[in-house]
Structures are given as C-alpha cells and as structure tokens.
Image (cartoon, rainbow, N blue to C red):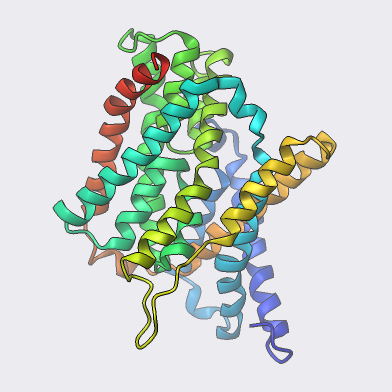
Length: 342
C-alpha cells in the first residue's frame, strides 16, 4: 500500500477522502442538519455512498489504496483516540445503576439481535452482527469498530449504519414526546439513565435528553459513555467467539484467536484520560481530530459501497433493527427500573 512507487497515489486517495470529510463536517454543521442530531459520521457515509454510485468510475484506480487505508488503518486509530471522550470518573458519577443498565442493555440487545437475525430472519452473520452492534452500543461508531473484527464487506456496514440513522433519529424525537406526555414515570436522573442506555448515537442521546432538561442530558451522556466503553470488552469477546466458532478459519490453516488490539488501546487511552494529565484544551483538540478521522473512515466506507449489493439483502436488516428498537424502548424501560432498585 505504501510502496515507494504507489506512495503518491495512496496519499492522493487519502487526501481525496479528507476533502470529502471536510464537506461532510461542513454539511453536518448547517443549523437544520445539526438540530436533527445528524452527526458528521452519518453525513460522511451518505455523501461517500452517493459518490461511489455516481462518479466513482472516474477516480484513478491507483487511488483506491488510499480509500482502503482510510477504512481500515485510520479507522482503528480513530477508535483508539475515542478513548479521550471518556473518563472512569464519568462512570463513578452515575453509580451502579448506570453501569448495570448499560451492561444489561448492551449484552441482551446483541444476543437478541444475533438470535433473531441469524435464526429467525435468516440474515447473513456479518450484517446481523453489525446491525445488532449498532443498536446495542453506540450507533455508527460501534458499527465502524466492529467491522474490522468480522471483516465484513463495506456495503454491510453501510446497511447497519442506515438502520442507526432511521431508528436513532426516530428515538431522538420519540423519547422526549413520551416523557412530556407522561408515559414514562421516571425522575429526571432515572430518565437520563434510560435514554443513555437505550438510544443509539451519542448525538441522538444529546438531542433527546436536551429536549427534556439539562439534568437529564448530563446523566444520559455519562451513561452513554459507559456503553461506549463497553465497545472494548465487546470486541474482544466477539473476536474470541468468532474464532471458537471457526468463522476466522482460512483454508488449510488453524483458527487463530482474533484479538482487536485497537480495543485494548482504547481502554488504555480512556484510563490515561482519567488521570487528567493533559490540559482540557488539548483533549478538546484531540476529540476534534478524532471526529475528523472517524468521519474520514465513514466517508471512505461509503466510497466502497455499491448500492447494487443492497438488492440481495432486502428489508431484513430494517426488520431486525425495528425489533431491536422496540426492545430498547420496552426492555430498556424495565431494565432501567431493575437497575435503580438493584
């Protein structure tokens, strides 16, 4: 990829993705788009996919290496830097109820999604895992983090992200409505735990909780960050599961246990961030860079997505995501009640 003769082409491909990323972030900051809680990551995959299915054939083939580098190497590095958004002190603030609710939601949502997707809907394994990860953990970022572990084709990740957009955006408007209408009998603090543990994207959590009150928003974001932290153990367990099942087996070779080392580094970075050794301004700058890198990875993912591959999948991923959406609303309600009484 970075051989001397290919280096200029690879760098051109990376720069090309970066230019699209700047456009995605600019679009995401338009007030109307921002008010909808649509993150730059979502905008990136949309414009990347649009490009892939319109003008992609005009891109020099030699630049493809730069796009692939963005979907893999830049992605892993961005997930590691994501640890700067989290501190262990955040977890302590919401206490045991937030930890219990987050852990149960992530675990049960993924298990339910995997079973329904593979056994009932007969959906392929990769799309099932990616869609379930997006619903159970943290939306598009979870799909991105899971993709290297399952080694899924880019279009399957794009499908999973699409379900996050549909149902995460729906949740952002639905939760405040249900709460203000009196259908959810929770105090502001408990409502924050409920939203943080069940709504898809971080942006969706902020949008839904802020529409109720700043107090709800504070606890919701912290609980959401606990779910984000669970990416690391989730990916490690998933890698072990796929290895033991033989899914990572190559012809005439023994199955190797696939440990996503970037997930380990993610935890270490979060631990380092918890020590508050860096000035706040630097951490803010790192998070801005990380958002840019994550958007690059998502945009490149879109550029690798051919819409024709969606035809064979049909509506099954939407059905799965809808079932998980209903589960998150009702199952999450009772899990939250259980967690606060634990």
